[in-house]
Image (cartoon, rainbow, N blue to C red):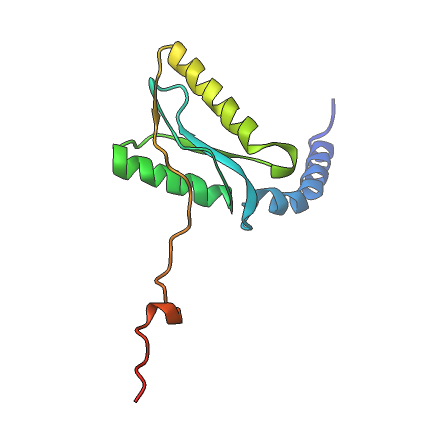
Length: 140
């Protein structure tokens, strides 16, 4: 039988070893990452809301929050939403889109209602303040 002091030393050693890793894993990716994107509502529900497939650069957190907001405001859906991103170097848009369509068909075959929202992510647009938006100057 091991003594309580020895167990404490071993547990402390393990925690001290893992402590630096905690900071690496707890931080969300704050840099936009390019990829082929798609989002769905809770896949175990009877009704599944799905986005279109699109290419873009964003953070997972921003895309998922925007999709969830769209579902809440347009459809009144308040459940779980998730998004995924496929690396552009390892996949093609056509393959990702085809795979999504196969999954949607499988859900429908199993009795689920799939609602295509047509939604794609785009960051909020800022007001155009370029010279083109200003009226032309008149000459004297």
